[in-house]
Amino acid sequence: MRSFFAMMVTAAFVVAAPMAQSETLSDALIAAYKNSNLLDQNRALLKAADEDVAIAVGVLQPVVNFSIASTFEHTERDNFFGVRQSADSLGTTMTLSANMTLIDFGRNRLAIEVAKESVLATRESLVNIEQSVLLDAVTAYVNVRLATEIVDLRQNNLRVLTQQLRAAQDRFDVGEITRTDVAIAESRLAASRASLASAEGDLLQARESYKAATGAYPGNLQPLPKTPKIARTQDEATEIALRTHPRIRQSQREVAISGLNVARAKAAMEPTLSVDGLITLNDAGSETDRLQLKLDQTLYAGGRLSAALRQNLAREEATRAALLQNGVLVSQAVGNAWSNLLVTSASIEASQRQIVAAQTAFDGVREEATLGARTTLDVLDAEQELLDAKAAKLRAEAQRYVGVYSLLSAMGLLTVDHLQLGIVTYDPAAYYNVVKDAPVHSNQGAALDRILKRLGD
Image (cartoon, rainbow, N blue to C red; front, side, top):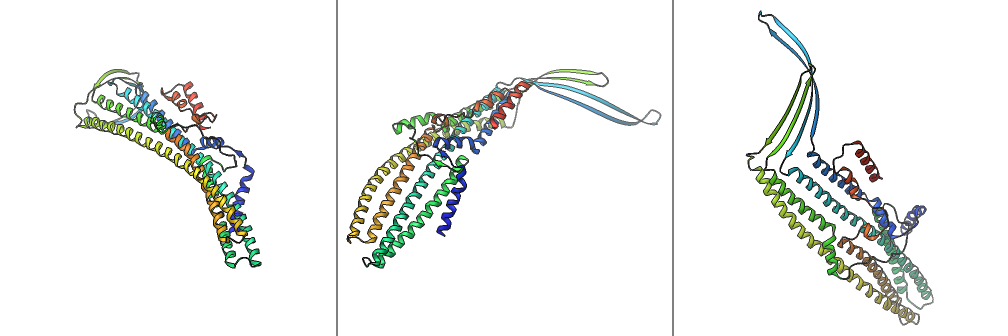
């Protein structure tokens, strides 16, 4: 079973070998940014929010309708003499009508402002998604390298234990040790094989996570580069986060939206002045022109308008509370990330000291064993402690590296622009600038087609 699993792992790497190439962390981040379905999904949602602005703007424009109707009529009636008579007629009528709101006390203008604020809030949400995508890529990259190093460590341990088993068997053959010592060596060798199989399984899972994060299996991953600069203190990190984190900025936009909706609810109680124009032409050559100025005022709505105002006031209060709570959560995330860095840094230092001490102990115990002062079990225990110390240091280093990027994410700075990856990023304003004025002319339509094609590439 062990050899079969090893063959499966080897086969997986052989299949990927033709595509394997040297990859850096920057390559992985760029691939994640370009291949993320989650980012594509939220970019589409942003475009939908952009169209809300165009829809709101369109309400302020005149609405022109054209209709043409052909009517066939068949009538029957008795004339003065009681004779039944029938008549057929066919008429066609063409109507051109227009309607435009002149005064609505700002309701439509406020609707446009709400749509614009919603666009800005959705953009901040997209930045937050970008941070999540990039953090997943960093974690996947680090985990593949960690899993590879753990596999190397386990393989080396397996080779050493195999040599020790042979040595124990030789010493047993000459009567220096007992059969119990050989059995202990065999047991540790079997455990080492199991640990290697587990490490190889972890590596396969790490590769799958990498593919999910970046769109392809990892090739030859280069050593981790130097981590980006972070804040000097936790207070500085928190201050930056409360000022720049997209979650905070999105909440601020949502507070603005709720305030505008309160104003809209108040304006809904005001009258509306509109103008209607109508031109009707029939096939008989008759033409009718009509122009109407109309004032609409709701006098009684069963309390609906007042309830809508109170509802929007309550929602404004809720969004303000949500903003304060998001500030608490962002501060907490910064604190947790900062604490994680302190803990992992201490773990790395402690693990390094443990490695030095465990190496000294292992060397001493192995030398004493050759003199008969130590048993095979003592040697194996000392080696296991050394192996555990090395593995602990590798894990702590990986956690600290990811922790730096987690802190950047908590500060709202884990973006392609801040990391200076050197690629063309998605421009959230490109589509908006084309559709914001509700384009209807052909040149604007052509520009929109070009934008859609570019965004789809």
